[in-house]
Amino acid sequence: MAQPEENKSIIAMQPQPQSKKYEVLFTGIDSGQIKIPKFQRDFVWGNDQTAKLIDSIIKGYPIGTFILWKTREELRSVRNVGNIQLPEAPKGDAVHYILDGQQRITSLYAVRKGIRIDRDGEVIDYKQISINLEQEPSDSDQIVYVEPQEDVDSISVHKLLTGKVTEFARDYAPYLEKIDAYRSRLQGYDFSTVVIEDYPIDIACDVFTRINTGGTELTLFEIMIAKTFDNARGFDLAEKYQSLLDSSGNGKDLEDANFDTIPSVTVMQCVAACLVGQIRRKDILKIGKDDFINIWDQVVDSIFTAVDFIRTYLRIPVSQLMPYNSLLIPITYFFFHRKNKHATDKQSKLIAQYFWWVSLSNRFSSAVETKMTQDLERINQILEEKQPSYRGEEVNLAMENLKYKWFSTGDAFCKAILCLYAYHMPHSFKDDALVQMDNSWLKISISKNYHHFFPKAFLRNEGFPNWQINTILNITIVDDHINKREIRANPPAKYMKTFKKSNKKLTETMKSHLIDDLDIFGVWDNDYDKFLEARGKHVIDELSQRLNPDLDE
Image: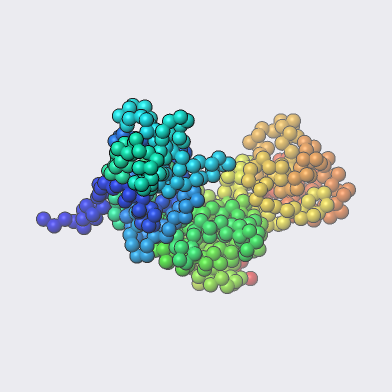
């Protein structure tokens, strides 16, 4: 009876047990046919562990199984071990990537090559690992040591494997029989290996994860680094992403724009959205290497254009204020399909409307991948200057929900309000200078740059509980030194009188904080309830205009 197609696939992917000799493993690494994928950890075994490994082999003990992945995929791999440069894989040939056994295989290779490694100032010389020739391999004691022992006849494992018979006859005449036996045991040892052939990269990485990291899944970014690596085209995703964040003065980067906190997964999703219109993990893993590399520069350009729009039109100066990093994806998608041309006035208003709707509705707090598919369709409508529908998903801005909204920088709604504050480009209470914002001090809610306009200590003394004190409506963005040295726990009427003397533009300054009139807002009377009501109404009015833009202007 014919096998179903899915069963054929499962049968074809069965592991293949094999045995390999020392020389085969060594030659495989030396020829580039056995490689260490870059998502493996660094070579960390010292000479003590290597000596014990060699000792076990000589005694005929099992040392575990090596698992190799045979594939024609070109992955980012380790390029050198110590001072030994590893060769490129032969063009067109399948390569065996080590999924399990890297430390053991690399140790065997290091001994054979006589490698010296300088690790944290300590030199590890694998050429010094030696066999005590005066002991018998049948002894239960270890006969292989990290270096020759004093007053004991010994031979280095490196020399044992690479020396000539004439050298042995000259230098080790009494031990020729034993040397021949040890050499035969090392070179003739059957190393247990399992080869998995032509597995898809995501399944191969899952195998690696299960046998190496106790179930800690390789990240999507780690897999895509391995999958998209192309030495001939000079494409290394790890380096490309780092350059996108910080080019070290060699070009445009996100650090210069204060958007360097954008995570790697968001960048991967930007690529997938532009290329296939989906951002699910499985969709990203299906992207071919050439397709990914070919579109990379175009997507990066669109990311920069999207960031420019966010910084200028939405006036969000730093990425730390973004309610969701995922908001970069649809805006990048928009400019990718606009070929990075400026948005029209109507398109700009519609993108802004979409931004505020997502941010205030907590839309991306769950099921982002599914919702993004729907939202990219909304972006397609915006590309055609059509109003997307938000029917049934409208944002309800009510004073009772806003007045005592607990302030947290991990909350998207609070970040949206902070974006509104940032839009008005807050100025210093003291001298009307523009408040400078950067990611480093906007990460946590206890930062001194987030100022409770009615100081917490003052309100506690007045009998207010924390849930009424720490509300987003009581937050202003100020300079660090003003908060620490001049405001402290003083009531607003007191510290604002001080600033009124030094800042002749105080009325205009306070408007940049959405505090329009110090009398109406209850500041001079230290009336906290009056302040919250007045500022809450102002915030709701501002947000309502953004959620319901006049598209005919």
